Amino acid sequence: MRAHSATLTICGKDLRQELRTRESFTSAFFFSLLIQIVFSFSFDFQSLGLGFEDVGAGILWITLTFSAILSLQNSFLIEREKNCLAGLALCPCDPSAVFLGKFLANSLFVLAVQVLILPIASLFFGYDLLRVLPGLCLVVTVNAVGFSALGTLFAAISVRTRRSELLLPLLLLPAATPVVIWGVKATRLCLAGRPLDSYGYLVALSACFGVIFTVAGVLLFDYVMEE
Amino acid sequence: MKNLNYLFWAYTLIWIVLAGYLFSLSIRLRAISSQIRRLKSRLPGGSEG
Amino acid sequence: MHRGLELALFFLVAALMILSLYCVFQVVPNEVTMGAVQRIFYFHVPSAWVAFLAFFVVFVSSMLYLATRRLLWDVVANAAAELGVLFCGIVLFTGPIWARPVWGTWWTWEARLTTTLVLEMVFLAYLVLRTQAENRAQAARLSAVVGIVGFLDVPIIYYSVQIWRGHHPIVFKSSGGQGLEPIMLKTFMLCMTTFTLLFLLLLAMRIRLGLLQEWVAELKEQDSIPGA
Image 1 (cartoon, rainbow over the protein chains, first blue to last red):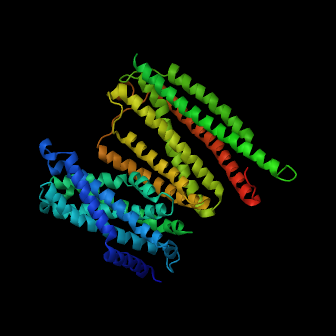
Image 2: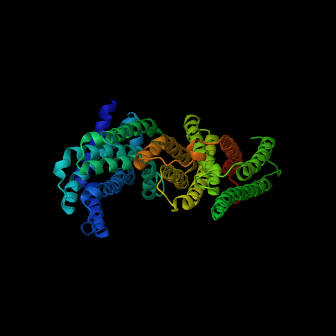
Image 3: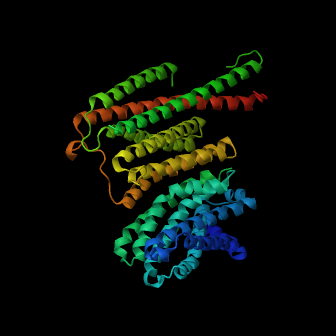
């Protein structure tokens, strides 16, 4: 089977499954929503005199990080529960195509949740996101994709172990520190209304991160999928 | 000279950590040696290559 | 490693350690701005170097394991990871002890300390993964992948934390910021050598333990000896 068609097939399978059940999306979305609500209770921004520009980056990225972990976990947990891990491993195609398919689907899931969460955050925290939308979309997309690249590989690793729910965050969070740092910094500059030149280099760095770990995933996925 | 307190604790901690690790290594080595002895005694002939 | 060689290395490390301690406490002059507490630097930085070296060993042996599937390389990777946790821990203990009298605070999100903290978490995740795998072969294989990816991440993490912090506090300057005095530099290099050899010694011992454990596990499987 040609590699790119295998990739698209796997991605399509995951998307169709998700559209049918909407399990992963709903849980990730409601989880993100709850995090936003808890933040509002924990830090009373208005009384502290802080605006969304000050704390929005942190909130958005904590939300994205934890809901992305949920999505990533789910994408492989579903395979394990339905005993499909072996099926994935035995696909008549390059294992890297399986990785790319999964990675594409995971990136789309993470971004889909963000599409809904950003307007809600805008509503909760009284901030007009439309002014900074293009820049914000760029930052969120590039960083979410980078996060998914590493996350897909680590999710595939952790799903095969006994305590997969514990292991994925344990593995992913320290390793994804760069993308979180760059994402938060870029988002903060973006929300403050700064032009793209001031945070463009951070987006470029995150893009490099994504590329490096996509390549790493492509090369190493074979070893992970062995039985 | 109060800083000497911190200096002392820093080096003492380093020593404790290293000594602790060496101790744990020796305990594990002793455990594995006794396992090997037990295994050897259970084998026919009493000795293993 | 041959027992004789290991013993020789042990005595060498012991002698160098004594010499290092002598130099750090008797030979080297007091640092101008920080006073006596700056001497922590002579063991703090070599520990960080050893933690990095350990990670490098994990990286190389992980690749060798995936290429050859010889369990020896997995034993080496595991041993190096354990030592990495140990020496990262030393850096994370001595850092705050140094920071407290100098900057007035126990913890500071300074670039290098933060990087070491993240590195420690990566090492720990590596070790936890090994315990949670379903069988020996899977533990070796999955942790090898994590070891490779983790090491590739190390420079990226370091760089990103530098960007985050935006500045680089100069903590290793002696008299009037003219760089390290020669005697300080020599003592520092001596400590680096001592710690590197200490790492090699501990690595050899830990590998020996690991190989014995593999051997026993293999024997138990082969001969199906109950109990033991």
